[in-house]
Image 1 (cartoon, rainbow, N blue to C red):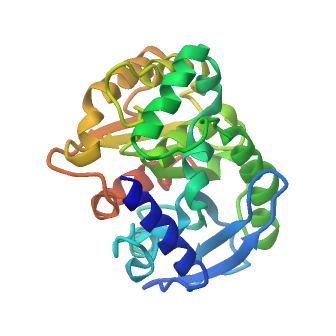
Image 2: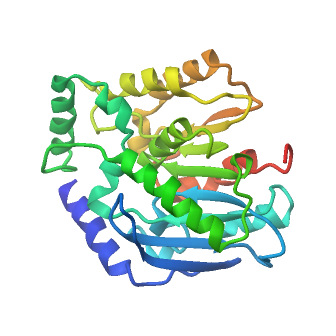
Length: 307
């Protein structure tokens, strides 16, 4: 595990200056985007074919930006291939026109930036110590673990979004602003929707990493997340949420945890009109798996209905 984490970090450094290639639309990169809340990082903005300042576009913010577009530019040699999926949906008029903002992670700080902060802060000190110990055993931390996701979301909402809305021709309202990610990116997406319900109209959370750590026994995190959702989920009349999960590799941890979340969704009034949870038997925890089903959440969130 430790070797894998180091390799990911090293590849990110090597790929940092390489421009991703897309098969549809075009990509604009803003290098080392500065923030007063988080470390600088690249921002990749995908614009569909025939993008025009004369039109207005919905916006999808996605985490792990370096894994979204070009498989030759990622450490796994696989990518979400968001450009292909989004371009096809738009051309077939299955979604409204939209742009994609890919927010790069910064390697070592990915986990604390994506870990929902308020649920963590609800833990006792003993439980927080347990989280740190579990992350150390998984070679994800050397120091004491402290999430900084509230800072990450402040960067996204108060710095990045205003820049995107000023620079591109966007529909800046909640009904046209969405957020998406996988694994820890799924966690931070649903957390963003809860914390900034006035900003985001929907979230897509693929293979959401409900354990938070990489242990199933004596892990206080899933219950803390469920308790947080029970009191913080936004109004189902104005928001849409998509979850999914497989059952192979890391996804094997998720089925029982997602079922607990689904019960909360039902209790809070979510129905098939505004919420989907999909189970994909045999699918694993990878960009390749997420790429195969990305069209489902994109069409669900960015439907041409209810504009």
